Structure formats: C-alpha cells, structure tokens
Length: 267
Image (cartoon, rainbow, N blue to C red; front, side):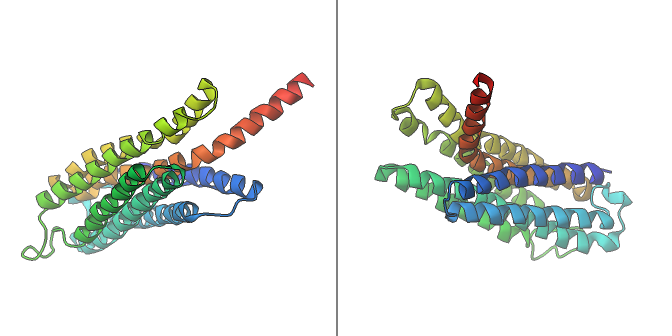
C-alpha cells in the first residue's frame, strides 16, 4: 500500500513549501514592499497544492495506493473523479508557479528580445499544461466509456510531451538571468550567489522530468497503485517550483542574518 508514504511525502512538501513561501512574504512585508502578480500566483499555487494533497488523502479511503485487484470495482468511478481533480489542482499549481517565476524575470530583463522569449515560454507552457488539464477528463478508465475517450497510450504520450516541455522551459528560465547578473557591478562571489539563487528552477525541472517518467506507469493498467508515484512527483513539482521561485527573495534575509551574526561575534 503506497497510500501512507504518498501522504507523508505530500504533506511534508506542503509544509516545506508553505514555510518558504511564508518567509518570502514576510521578507516583502519587512521591506515594506507590496505584493506583485508573481506573489499572488505563488500563493494560489500553494493553495492548489494543499487542495491536491487533500483530495489525494481522501482518495485513499477508496483504495488509492493499493494494487487494483484489491480495490472494489464500485470505487473506480470515485477514484477516477478524485484522481482527475487532484491532477487538475496539481497541474494548475505547476503552471501558475512557473508563470510566477517567469513574470519575476520579465521585471528584471531590460531587452525586448528576452522579454519576448519569456512571454513565448509563458504562453506555450500554459497552453501545453492547460491541454493536459482538459484531456485528463477524457481519458479511458476501467469500467468507463470506451468509445468516447482518449486511450491511455494517447493520454500518456501527450502528458509526457507536455511535462517534458515544461521541464525544458524550467531549465531555460533558470539560466536566462545569468548574462544580466554577470554584468552587474558586484564581486564575483556575490554574482555567483545571486545566479545560483535565481537558477534553482533546475530542481523543479528535475522533478518535472521524474514526473514524466512516472506518467508512463498509467498505461500499465494498475493505476490505483502506480498512480501514487505520479501523485508524489506531481506535487513535488509544484512544491519545488514554489520554493525555487521564493529563495531569491530569501537571499536578502540570509545576508541580513549573516551580517547580524558577524556583528554579534565581533562585538
């Protein structure tokens, strides 16, 4: 039964991402800065992660996490509905948290070519993942409609493509700030620190890649059991994106803590 470990990992991710996001908002409040669109998108994304986790936990009562031959066939419809809802919440949380980071980059970029490139990433990533949300409701399930649905193979193929594209854009967005940061009048060590903080989206890209691999298990038929890994990596993608988008703001807090500690030590 993968249900318990799925819950443990999901709610740990919810807690960690909520803490990091809370620190981001606290830093902005401390600096008397208002919330921008990127902040609001991250807040909504976190609540979507909570919703995905809650639906997933509720779905355990219908047998999610167990092998399909241990699940009452009468529960398949409920499992499908709840699974679809969790997927919708997770995918929307993913795309909006990624959009949040892209909007942050838009505010930093000075040249139009880079702004146009970021807008292209925002629009295409949103279209790819919104399509996943829509097709989720039309995939074939055991005991369901067979003539008017998308086969598991077709759904897996498209979801994998959308996930891979999303992951690729994570890596692109992670390195877009580097030329700008390297042109700043800062010490090389400080430049590297800022660049690394702005490039933590590679972690989100890595989790998105793992989710693509987990998607393949849907086609195996035992969706109530193997679907657990997809839930874990889907929620991990949202959580890591929220944290990666928040840490650049927290870098200021880390510097303040370090400075205060040094003053205390030398005084």
